[in-house]
Length: 206
Image 1 (cartoon, rainbow, N blue to C red):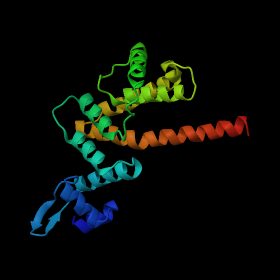
Image 2 (tube, rainbow, N blue to C red):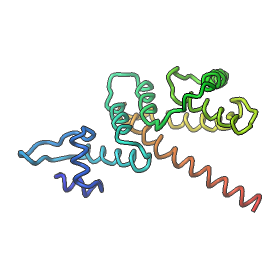
Image 3 (spheres, rainbow, N blue to C red):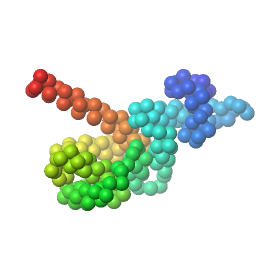
Image 4 (cartoon, rainbow, N blue to C red):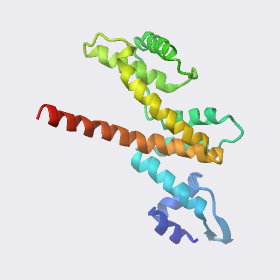
C-alpha cells in the first residue's frame, strides 16, 4: 500500500507517519521510486501499536522508542524481554525520599513471604514501597500486608495473562501482547475498580 493508504487505514496523518519513519519508530517501506515506497500489514500493525501507546497509555515518544526496542530484541529469555518492556512502560519514578530504602526493604521481605519469584531490578518494587510511604504519610500505621487483598487478585490476573502470553506462537507476539495488556487492560482495570466503587457506594450508602 502507498503511504496515503497507510494513513487512511491507520488513522495516522501522513506527516506523523513520515516523522515516525525519520525517527526509526516505523521501519522503512519497500522503495519503488526515489520518493515513493510501499508498505504492508507490518507497518499498519506497528502504527496501531504506537497509537495505543501514545493515546491510551499516554507514553512519550521516548518511552515508545524504549518499548519498541524491547519488542525487537531477540535471542533473550522471554521473561527478560518482558521485564524490559515493563521497565520501558514506566512513566515516572519515585522521588529521592530517604525513607524509600527502608520501605523497599519491608516490601521486599513481604513479597518474599508471598513466594513471588521476582528480579532484583523490577521498578515496580520501588512503586510499591512508594505507595506504602504515601499511606504512612497520611497517618496510616500499616505494613506491606495492607496490600494483601490486592496481591491475591493481581496474582490471579497475572497468572491468566502470562499463560496467554506463554501460548503465543512467537516471542515478539508474546511481548507485544504483554505491552498491549499492560497499557490497555491496566487502564480498564482502574476504570472498572472506580466503577465498582461507585456501584457499591450507591448501593450501600446512596
